[in-house]
Image (cartoon, rainbow, N blue to C red; front, side, top):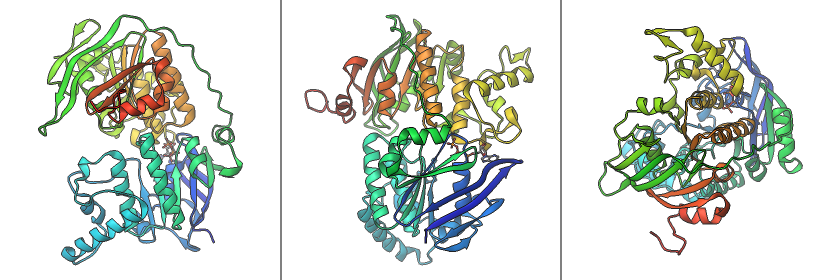
Length: 509
Ligand SMILES: Nc1ncnc2c1ncn2[C@@H]1O[C@H](COP(=O)(O)OP(=O)(O)OP(=O)(O)O)[C@@H](O)[C@H]1O
């Protein structure tokens, strides 16, 4: 008897099917991958399973029993756990408090000690090492993810749903994470993993269900398939990576940072420590590093979101230290942030409104303070066409962004920031959450920008992405640049050493 069976699941939003006759089954002790392009219906299916949405039709059997979860609390009480792409942890609370928060229990004082012991033994059993007393806000993304998984296990989850779990992890963290998954599987848990990375599916899963346009088009045993076959079922054609020719980088600087520092509020450490960096015209400069080593701060001092505490920044030959975010944007510095919900989109607004968020008060969208909505709509329509953005339902450009799939939200940001006017694109994790077709498209687009003489500062935790795209690669560690390598001399081993804070001579800086 399968652990889970979802049969003929159907769900429509405003008359448009997000899921249509979808079937999925997961065994005990199985890692089951759910694959599909952006907007194929994966998250909707999982949200139905987890009780966030109610299906319009179809049946769910869990441990052989027909179920219909009314809410996530209902799903959790039956033994289902879900780790979302955006974690739902409270930063100011400890690991322990986050895990026990809302999990019931009356005798709180006694329960805490017992809970702490229970969490430690779960952590030990599955290799999910975290310290119960640490504040969640001070943990790395990988550690926060462990807390989320512990939270689900503490609530006795037998089936875990993981939505794009490796998108936020470094290669090393992904390896550790896979060990955890294998242990969970060996202990008889069922796992559903949503991922766009075909190599990960091949490495970790037993079976794969592929969704296309809301329908389950194929179920495959991983051992009997290939990445090419998966890709063909997912996008309806084999993937043919066509690489743009790369033009040479010019010797003219676009952006220069001289001794740029940013001191942290909490004493002692520097978020950025005397950074010296030049990005040339027509160059893609990759920034590699374990997340949290100053990459976000670097992007923010360049785009003007934060004010550096020391040093100088110039763009196109003139100092921009005292320029605002808006002024820098109009000078041609655009920003694809890694946190699309916090920094980039207003999710209650429509596609059109988000598209002109940075330019609504300028020509061609505004004239004498009057907004020409038609022009804005046309801009949104062009972007939808060019980036293959799937809006939800029939509302098209008037769809509130919050109703769109994660990957399609990302495409809205990309199309806004990679505009004709942009001359330096600060791109932080630009392809996180995008399917392989869209990732390929973004890579080609960035190379095209470079070939047109524009500059790209590419921050990515994905080393393959960095190696594929960059002309030079700078590696960050604890707010410093450990080294800069040319495309030709860059190898994963050397970058890995720098990422760990080790210089070529073998010593720590
Ligand atoms: N609450 C909602 N209201 C209206 N439409 C929705 C809602 N949730 C999802 N949709 C639509 O359903 C379709 C499937 O979206 P879903 O989020 O399930 O895709 P996905 O496969 O998870 O994509 P991604 O890989 O980009 O995360 C999309 O067209 C989306 O816009």
